[in-house]
Length: 88
Image (cartoon, rainbow, N blue to C red; front, side, top):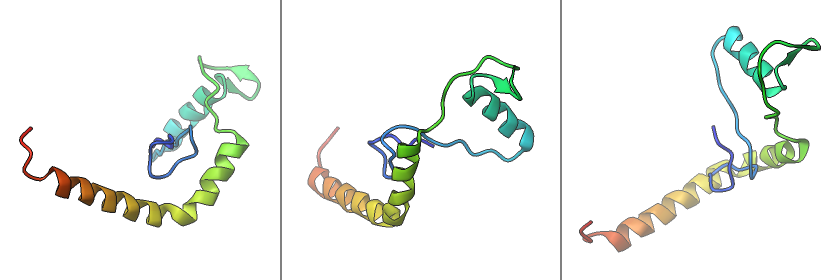
C-alpha cells in the first residue's frame, strides 16, 4: 500500500506490505534491513524502513481517514458532473 502524498492516507512517503504467512514476512523483513538477519547478511537488501516522523504522521492521520475518503468522493462527483457529456 502506498502512503505517498497524493494518496488518501499519507505519510508523504512510505507504505506498507500485507502478507499472510511467516515466510513472506521474514523475507520482507530481511529485504528492508539491508539483507541482515541476526547480524549476518542473508540476502541483498535495501534500507526501506519508514522513519519515526513519517510513522507518527500516519498514526495521527488515522482519525481523519474516513473524512478524507468522503472529501475525495465529493470531488470525484464534481468532476463527473462537470465532465458529463464530453466525448473523449
